[in-house]
Image (cartoon, rainbow, N blue to C red; front, side):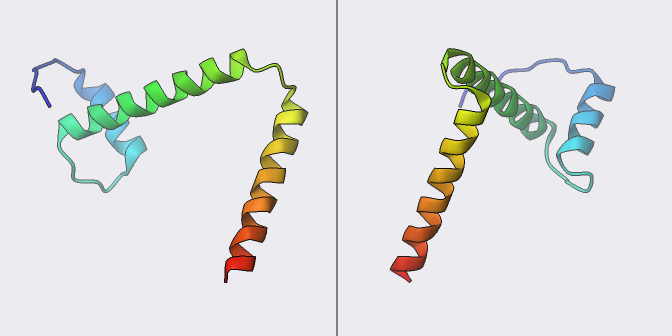
Length: 78
């Protein structure tokens, strides 16, 4: 991975670190990387949701149906 230098507001970085894990002792670069990954992941989810034609209730029903199917499969495999 390419290494670059950026300036990040110290207070913002401290808030991100506290939100991530208050007792975490990770490098500043990892805090920034985790925050970016979270942001990008959320944006991708929002984009996918905006393209869906399902209502919220339909989406929840499908999600629960899949969850229950996965649990049945897991129980039958045991």
